[in-house]
Image 1: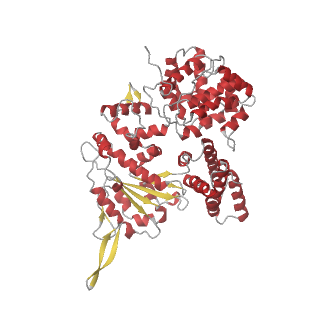
Image 2: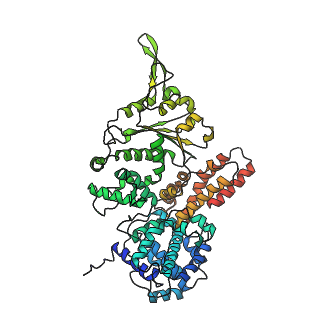
Image 3: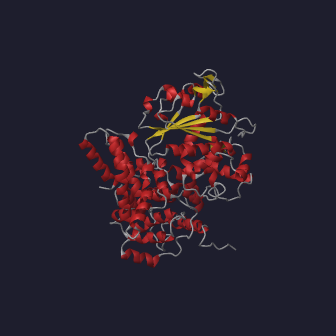
Length: 604
């Protein structure tokens, strides 16, 4: 006797997904109503014409405003077919309200006639109370493109059903597991070239969620590819040496599955325990997910520079990177995993050393110099070590090791903030050579003092590109560091606008910020990419919004409050910044650029 499925739990998601495959993919029926000939290739093709080929890019219109315009000539069957794609997008997410989900069919069907027909034929309980997990902000703001992805996937599946190559739920799931990750590579001719070029390199949360729905026993319920990369980065040492399965190179999902098996074997987690559990989350920390490439660069070069415009979070990224790097090395030892859960990493901040450079920082401050010291009635000149030596001594004194043999010491990170503010060749002096020839004594310009940089000392520099062009950095500096650009990041801005605004408002705002930076990069000859405005400046919207609401009260339309907040941000931050960037440009040109920038930002 089968156990009844509780409609209040996430298990119902899998029941509904199976029904979707049976009714919609293997047949042309609806999963939302009792009607037939709804989810057909013919209707999907019309959805493609209205939604993809006729898409409305940018602008102030919300997702629903655009849908209303795009589907104004669509009949009931096409609208209901499109409703299924929205339903599938909602299905796994538990961070979207049930009310919003249930309203969706009526917003798409729109007319009273279509709504009435839907009410007469709808099936009950077509939305679960719970999802399989949080789909995340990117899933919400990327919605139109996620729907594009689902539409193309469903078209491909139904084409295979029509050919007779897929006939069962299991065969459909197997096909999703093997083809959903290469949808655009294999089917580039299914959409016009402009849309293909736009979509082919995007990340899709629904790709990962469809993997899980198809094979929940293997694929994790993780929407973000970057989250998967971060899990692999921080737990990768558990599966070192595992490169192939049955002669095939491991995919990231293969690696995560092996990581889960090893964590279970070590009794760190219980079978089925989520990577988002309070026990595992702090180790891989989703907020570090964009740092995987930076960690690799720091590991193999031992010195990197994060450079870019102001407000792009270079110092913040350096600090997060340092913590992630130390934690990653600590976990290289499998036995440290259990230690981590009981003790954590003791004194991680004591292994991160930060020096703020300024125009007065000298070789004597950083490396070594002579000082006149009083000795009773006389004085003498003595050699004095600079700030660097204190960091080196702490790294050399490290006792925690990260390898089974106990020879590799836990890293220490030296963050050199704003290196563009000093004459680096002069300040660094012999440090260049000491960085290259680790564990070898290099004589300094000060007699009796030599530099010896240990293997476990890593350097992260930050630099504002506006103040100091990379092209002007001398060769000695350039070749000893990996130079990593840090520019405006849409996803970071989305995260920084957490919870203050609706998904549609965030999507619109981030789109305008991106458009403004595109204008600065490509349309203002006096500026260019180096002068893009960083996401941290745009994220001030949240702080100003809260202060503005506290000042004027909440009894006003939220849309008006948001509009006023954008105007304040423009006046007190963005406009003065652009004016300063333009500097000695002709006054009439400055005025024109500011007017166009304001219009793009939406505060004309």
